[in-house]
Amino acid sequence: MTPNFPTLADLGWSADFQRQPDEDELASLTPARVSGVHRDRLSVLTEDGPQELRLPPDLPAGDIAVGDWVLADHEMGRATRLLDRHSRIFRRAAGDASREQLIVANVDAVFITTSCTEEFNEARLERYLALAHAGGVPPVFILTKIDRTDDPESYLGRLRAIGPKVPAIALNAKAPGAVEALKPWCGPGRTVAFLGMSGVGKSTLASALTGIDLDTGAVREDDMKGRHTTTAREMHAIPGGGWLIDTPGMRELRLTDMAEGIDEAFAEISELAEHCRFRDCTHGPEPGCAVQAAVTSGTVDPARVERWKKLRAENAGHTASALDSRRKGKSLSKLVRQAKKAKRPN
Image 1: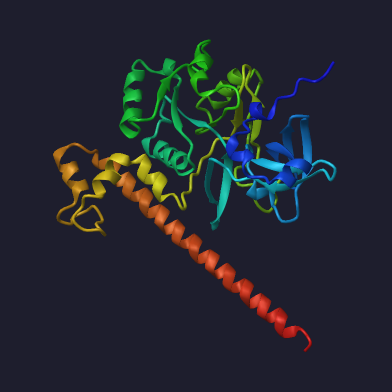
Image 2: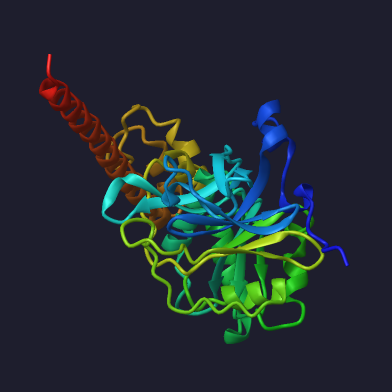
């Protein structure tokens, strides 16, 4: 019996990806979707089934995410080129402001998951929103454990307050109707991912969507450098079409180069800021501050304004640090080249 492998369209291949390779590449190389990233190899899905590919010398594992597309030379058993992404979710790597840590790539929706428990935290959810917006991924709020409260609507109200344009779904992850509630964002060729703290029901929902028992277990989050083994992120098929990228819970969300994502997550405040009298307004005691005027009138939550200012300041600091690190790295590389050149015999 001939195996029934997915087509490229089933895997999420689109016209945007088709335009990137030239004719020679398409004639000799095969598109492959990354389903797992390891120290020196990739697990990929192709029209001929799952395969393993070696990484080229100039492409480290940390530069690839689950969900990426690569061109594969199957005779050599190697990935040769990483295609440009249409979306990604990333954060600043621990201990290195200049390095981006990829989480997932080429996803069509991200389910930002929280619960009707003490875990619910607006500041953390706003960070997830900034990550999604910065990477060009449409967010969806998933509110779980509605059986733990007598008033799930109050939690939904808090979600609408921080994301009025973001769809919000309240459910019990173990209930039979949970999967149906997520289906509008799934389907053939579409890829979704979950983000959220451990213990909010992500793995339960992921298992229900895929029909696979996905036990995330204890996962190390910062293995993208040094003792890198595996990202612990995998792509799984959803019955009926589509793909789920399973991600571990993340305790830390460090933001760098995300000014636009932050402003989109706080759209009602950033739009007001454009009308402040001074271009360099700190949105504090300055006269003519449109943001503080809205706070005074009661149309904007002052706590939300403070969280917006905090994220902007954090992002600005990390971005400046990253830029400084990159400049120092370039300067050091230049000195090394000059030293090597000086040692060469005339």
